Length: 270
Image 1 (cartoon, rainbow, N blue to C red):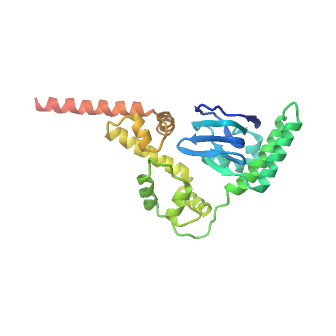
Image 2 (image 1 turned 180 degrees about the vertical axis):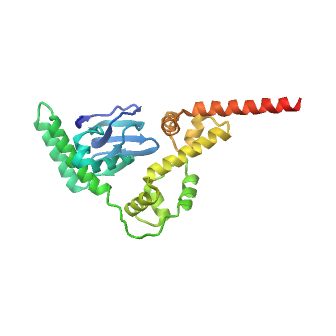
């Protein structure tokens, strides 16, 4: 499938969904807020966000707003073959701002879109998308250093994450704990763990949610808040995709197991 480039305003009432293709959203006018499976932020003109495929995201436009949307199937020419490395952009959601060269390229892309009254062809959309993704990857991706470095103190990072599970945790927050720049921290972290910082924090949140389901009677909505998911449905989607079942099913299994243990104890005492 090919890339699709389109312009739309976002609804001023909060909406949410997930889709099986990657997406990049760039603000052209006004402001919009996004939350992508626990990562929240705002976009305005010349800033945007990366939405990986199958990630539940909540979004709302504020007043008059307009966004440029790049819909990018995993098998699009702009993400495969010669361009396969660009798919690393979608390892995790993130927010970004366009620098001056990318602002000029965005203006060019919009002129191309406006000049083609019948809409961009599939081939042209893929070429324009691949160029933009390549430039964005050069700025956000970076190349991991393979030089000998000291290992990150993951135990210290775990303690920080656990203390702040209910709050947004940025890469900058984690990098500050390691006394590194964001770019250096990202590269070191992936080299050591095989995960992006966001993937690691998300896993930590889900493990905490699982413990609370097993060890407490706390309502699922409160567990979502306590582990950094703004909505119960976001926790449910992430939990199912990671553990293979919804949180409610795990809780039922725990309660049934507890009831059986009580029954067995009563039998042995009578």
